[in-house]
Length: 608
Image (cartoon, rainbow, N blue to C red):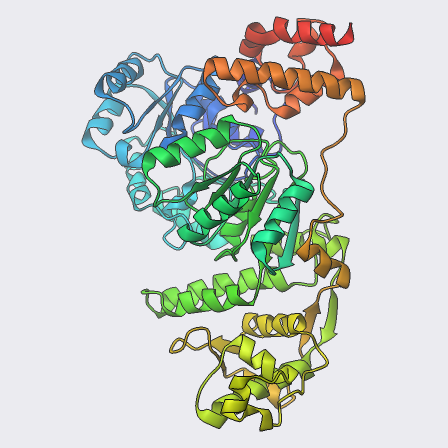
């Protein structure tokens, strides 16, 4: 049976009329003292699943979070709601830390955020023994998975919470985990008796789009200018140097872009992150070191200009777009060189054979997502064990690619690779193989005598772009491999034989001409936010300006005051009384008291 106190807290403190999805069941489980393992997509409302029980149960909710740089913002957001929240981390001086410790022991805190390495110190454990703990919330729980993309060794010590406080309920939360990762989380955190809650992984407001890489910086610029001018976004790159080059390029083109990677000085990273959170329209160009725990709701796009290493990583990163539920884009450009580079990185990795096989399987799943001719969202969610019908909001649904019999084309490629190796005992890169196929004469082909090969010119019927697509797919299918002894050179595999002998038919993906053009320029099928009527739009803009001024005065990001979605609802509803305003989602009792009259005055002023 549901605890009525939970709904009362949700409405009074957070300003929401009702729970969504499985939130109610999760909250009830923890309030009643049970453990829970929660998988819920970014933007699905995970934080409420521990914040509400912490406010209902006696004592302080202790939140274990790896995100020291974001604790201040999380605490600021709760303080705006009237929640007594604080954090303990290495950014505080001893006086500030002592004040927090004293407040905890005195029972004056509802929520206390602690980094895992801090929590596991003798001093912190002794402190926790002196207070009353309502629950332990282990956020970003996938960090405990040694096979995962965000492994944090300090998370392995968190199993001791159950041993030391067996009567305190624990809730572990993550936005992404396969069945295998979920089992690993439960084992490593000693959540053997925890109830598992797996919400839908679908984020229907995000449009997934993958284009062939072709002068990727220009493609990225066209995408941002054509679809997201002046809007907040994140651009992911594989290397630190690529981050800095891309940020500098976008900045030179008039885009407000900032770099973020682990090699930057900590003050620079903190300043750039703060600007991204607090200012409108900033584009963060980053490695995967950025993004976990970012609560900014109005990120309108996430772009990848290098191929992610795994579907889990890709899903986690794209999930940072559109947390407010409004339309957002996940855009990825990838090409042949991405596949070559990733295969080489796996072959050169220091792990054992089992580790390399695991990385290879993750890459294969990512390549399968890129090369599918079916709905991308279907393929993405199937990786997490969820089945849906075609989504109608990804590129393959909106402009279906063609599937064609590429068996003969594949045989031409594989024969060329074989004959080049047989001719001189050497292997060659993709560009040279395509030159041979298309019969492109050069000083090199003449010097090596390759113009006399039987395969010279057998592929003149296909363009260079088309051949690169064939080579990319053969690499993705494991019918070609990257030779680790030569940079970027290609070699046959055991599976190549069946194709060469005609024992295996290959259906390959061919982009439509329209899709190929979209890969080079901005999309004509851009996602757009729902249009407000002119009078509501004017009020929305006035409310945004007011919110920005309040946020600057309080020293917090604008979304901490109110989300855009809340302001849009106010602009449409045009409430005339505090009671009317209190029924708007996101307007809790504390915010109604603090800002209600100001909002009503602006609504009335706009109507006048």
